Length: 274
Image (cartoon, rainbow, N blue to C red; front, side):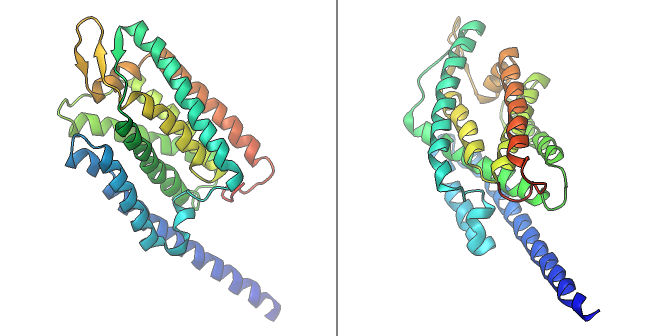
């Protein structure tokens, strides 16, 4: 019986460690969620506000999580994957430009070239969302939910819902995004979730997210026939609801499941880094 005591003590210590980590992740999640809306509230020209919020998020995570802040934020990626992440970002950005050029022509829209400063801002905007939804929210749920696909599909719902609530209630246009636009956001969320679950860092999910965002969100979109400017909620409504965009996001979600299965084939514990 005495021989079993160290095992019991070890399990108790492991349980306490997991509990402490869970509280740290929950605290970090709440802090980051509170910081996220500020770029949209304090200024209309908010490219620099995204950078300030990123700095505030990282400082808060360092304060709440201590030396583990980079891992909890999903920023601790293997050096060998740094270059593939950059390459993935470039390829996604180029592919997004090619796709959107055809999409805009097909639906009678035109876009101006985005400003570099705005594109830089949206690099950080995507980073902030990846830290919140992927690293912190999924990182918390991993400790309680034993199924990676369930987590991936489940987290995609609040990701789409947040965009719906943002444009419906906090934007002056009070525009309700259609089901097709929400489906695009859901499928994109699934793809980013799976990439985080597969690699246990936000490098590739950020590359996919930021590569898309820097192409279309900083640009000014007009109706080609009338030169009427479309604002962000209207662009989400018109562009994300197109069958080609919905279909592309669905394909990304399916491919991301294949990546997740392949990365996790060698281990039965998906909660550990690959």
